[in-house]
Amino acid sequence: MRRNIFANALIFLMAATLSLLLLEFVVRMAGSTDPYGRFTFLRFTLEPLELRVDLLRGEVDGYLANEEIAVVVYDGALGWTYRPNSIRQAGTFTINSAGFRSRRDFSKNPSADTLRIALFGDSFTAGDDVSDEEVWGYLLERKLKEAGIRAEVLNFGVGAYGMDQAYLRWREHGKRFEPDIVIFGLQPENLKRNVNVFRQLLHPSGPAFSKPRFALIDDELQLLNSPAIPPEQLLDVFENFSNHPLAPYEFHYSGRTQAARWWSASRLLSIAFQALRNANEEPEIYAPGSEGGELGKAIVDVFADDARDAGSVFVVLHLPLHYHLASYFSSSPPRRPPYDFLLEHARESYHYIAFEEHLEPSHRDDIHWSPTKHYGPSLHELLASVVADDLVACIVNGACDLTRFDDLSSIMDMKPASEK
Image (cartoon, rainbow, N blue to C red):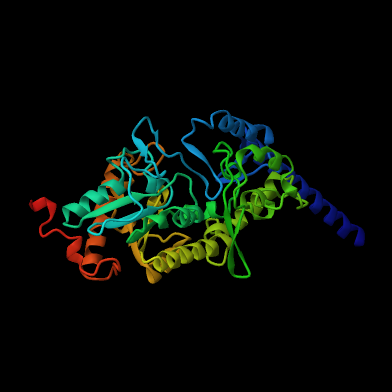
């Protein structure tokens, strides 16, 4: 009997092993590997166990060779920023002498009869893929004036910024311009950027920059990689990255380098691990209690506190992506995203504008989006109207406490521009 049990167990073990080997073969054959060593099967992507320094080198060398003419340049405090007095997007995206998007310059001290609004965020705030006259910040200024409020809008948005960099942009540059209202363009996918230090490890073909990154240590925000490692030193860092002091804080390296796990060489087991870990749409990035989620919430809170301490009204504006809208309109009532806790926190704690609540299912159509899935002109126009209407109501009913103005008549025309 013992021999039979042993034989049956051996047969079962051999069958299970052969089945696993067959599944491993199927996964490897059905999946694909890109030039950067990333393996994709179904909707899961496995990052390489080793950094492809040879491929990362190309972006670094390319930036260093063109540094004198680059529009996006290294900045020690922010990671990268726009070169002052430069132009991008074939002449349609103008950067002024202070390094933010505008075709005119502004004094540090705002005029006594003009409301000053400052915008902070990533490319959806900066307005990638639309012209200077089409970006929502420019249109917001025009619409406020049409409503009878003398206003100027300063757009500090920068492409590829995380929430951390948006806050640092306020702290390092925006605060000096003494805005009355600060609008933070919250694009929740940037939770991924908050746990990123080296841009190329998040996007291998991306710009050759590192960035400052906050970490929650003993429930306190601490700033790491400040000043940011300059591009000319990145290759030395990549060559021995696992031993670098910042490696434990780079989610997009530690999350993919699983060499310490005995099963890391198996595509099948690695995919299974990824599926279990991402069962709730990447909870390690977006969910409450996760590093990414708690860090994002802490950054919004410190941003709000700092803006209000400076005498500014703090506004959180949710800017959904195309695929967020696809999910939002896929069910009734609308399906809430995994980062909804962050939106609810902003709604409960701050002046909050939810752009998706002003959109229709038809706004998912390509006509409203650029080829890179940024907002097209029609969405910028609508967004400007939504924000303008909200701010006008907030100013008129007194919910926006504009501490610089004793009398709102100083910034309000007797008649809206549309009636003149």
